[in-house]
Length: 102
Image (cartoon, rainbow, N blue to C red; front, side, top):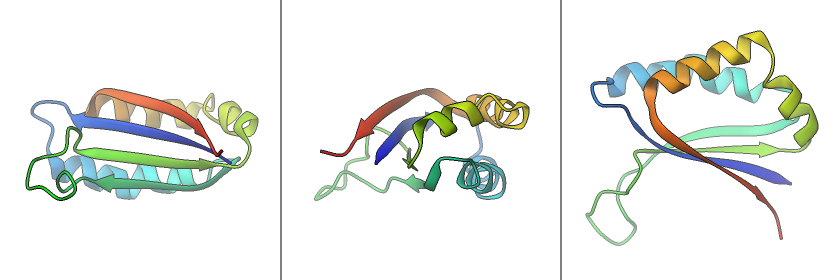
């Protein structure tokens, strides 16, 4: 099983409420229904574990992928291109990390 982990902060001036509403009503349902995706979740960070210090990123996305080829093909879909563009409007230099299980 592969996972894509996305780490990001919101761009300056972006409303947390606007982003989280978009994530719940657009991003989560769209990505969860993509071919090759087993699960997609968006996590809001609270703090660094064992500390009151802020985490370096406000949000973490985890995409569980069962078929990377199907997933990558689906990203070229016109609707997904629109969703990706909307995401770029919220996220400030997101970091996408591809992983695989040991």
